[in-house]
Length: 215
Image 1: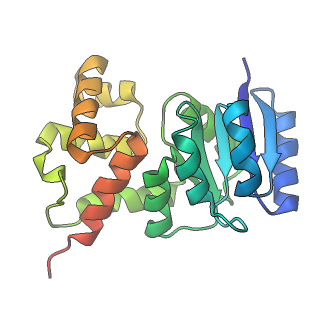
Image 2: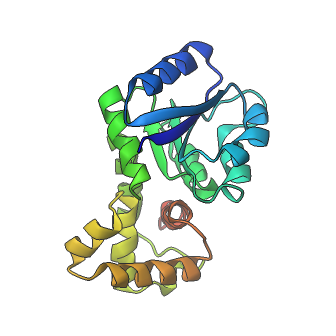
Image 3: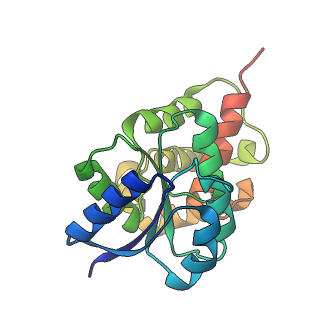
């Protein structure tokens, strides 16, 4: 069965290119496309696409704000940011809002296709240099606060692999534990960090780590 995709992009030529690409790709089907968050918000919850490709720099409400409003209404939809922004603030704010992936607009169609399949399968795809920023934040000295200091070493390992975009099965294989055990670790991580999603957990832990360098 093809994967339903909606697009929220204000640049009409780029949106048309994405629409035509989705229509030509058998693995996906176009559900809808919008030029602004204000137009998307009333429609998307009833359309329930499996994936929503979201630009950040939209006119009026930003893509990050749009995801923040829609995620609670569309918990099964995976939001993937497709943007020109490479800075850590946009990245972590998007993940905290509920995005599951973060891709740059220079991503090739082959990479985009693989990323959409990955996010549909439970992964968190990111462009390589974006993923590097997340991983680097875990390597900074200092102890994060706000609940993350209560994480066990194993929970920190699981969270690190989540940040790298690994699937639950891949985490289980890497740590040589079962998938149910991974689920248990992730549930406890969510409870300790007071978050409700993978992206929020990664964003909170990584952002705090970035801000906690010693002076």
